[in-house]
Image (cartoon, rainbow, N blue to C red; front, side, top):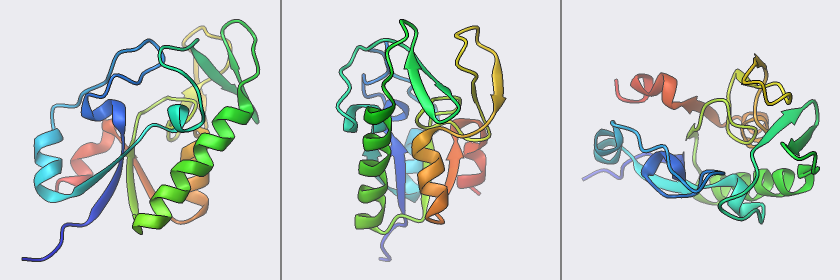
Length: 147
């Protein structure tokens, strides 16, 4: 039997309680993904040393701040680097990450005003993965991974 392709995936999408609010974002298609891919779970924010639960954070340009104004950019950068290191160590060519997140969002993220307004952009981990030619998907385009 051939080895399954590897898929880096946000832990929260697999039901791990690692979201900022201590919850998860379990996806309905997890079993189908597990049949097709070997999943490599990551949470860039926890890898960056942030606790769960934690204050909500949003990206403002090249920085990430919490709703209380704390600058958590260094933790997000470190988590992004740790995520990339794991992807490279496993030779992952694809990642499925959480949409709109300041770490994992792809194409659109929250604007940093905590008003739920979206802007064009990527989360820090997504940005770094894409710079290293790792194709990033979100749960919003999961069907593309299952064709």
